[in-house]
Length: 517
Image (cartoon, rainbow, N blue to C red; front, side, top):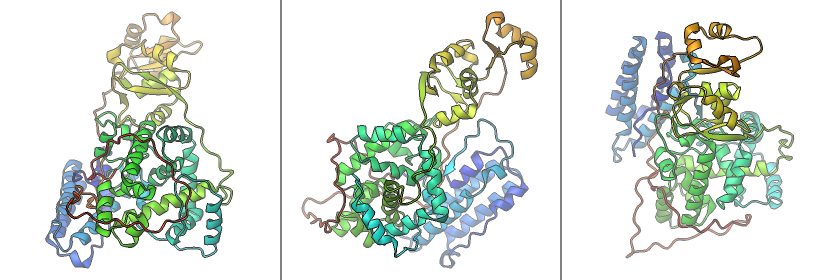
């Protein structure tokens, strides 16, 4: 399904307004390929982008958003048979990625609690790059693999070595360390779910590559969350998406869905490297590549350029991370301090309830509640949602909620009373009239909390922002295999690797082969 929201929406939808200074930020140098500079679609898109910049200068962000969306959609509608299609795809991706790099903080002064922050997927920066190989590293890595126990088959070649070199030094090293530290929050949960679903524990490094363990990571291909699900595949695996919550952003739910999806892909292709490639570009893409080349081997497909360019590096990146993380002492990571694992209780919310009220009830900062519940898109938890609160606080939080009328829980607050505090002092602190405080607290004398009737604007629902780069041409509808002329599938010679696990043999529910993941 064609992506219909441009990357410009990510930069604009989250912002309260735009001014003339921001116009200069959007006026980035695009350097279109000379071969398509005069292509009618490129020229028309450029005209709409120019009009969009003018709308920004005039302070009309809605019109700018419409024009930017129109420009990107116009480029994506380029016919498959157009001889300049590949060049236009590249131009579209570059155009989108430049806007993606805009610093949201500099564009939006005074972000409110309802402005959900999203992070760029770290994979976007390296998926199509190559890195030099340290000739001294090959024998070292080969020895490491020989002594490494891994359910995921490990391979050493120049591409894998290049990414090992990248992650072991410079910017790649910093990216690796930040992700590894952050992984401490989720590692016990991820390992538990991968084991329960019968897939290799090493698949945790797929999440490290995809998102750096950022629950709100968003890629230019509209994949979101720690495991980077697009909308359709997320729905296939039970990840609900609505105006108030998006389960793709929930670490535990998305991990369960990813494990099931990967297990299904392995059962379909019988090879973990092909399964990983299919996770990236879609099972339909891999299936067609196998049929086209007659090789059911990822490395043969890669060498024959039968998979998309971003998929050529996808598996090597995951293998490089696996090799490094399986040998932390060799790469100076053994003493890295990981963040404390998240530990929480869950309570069902029966009426619209603000995260601020939950923070008041749990006596923790609201940012902590947001971190524990990244799937909540606004400051309000919808009825029926299971809210995470700190361990051993569920009963106290539920009791505190009951102090506030159900129809007021999305706007009112709670104040934990300290010795000497009175209704008058609390009213002054929150700038609330004393009569309102007295009406909301008829039993104040024996209360541990004061109910604060703050009348604030109720937030509007939203959806997870969608960003758009080049269209996913790599995974259209699966080509039906002909029974009359079967293709002889050749498998490349076996490579030395660790033993391969057999996932739980359950009948998979396969996602649409036209989806990315």
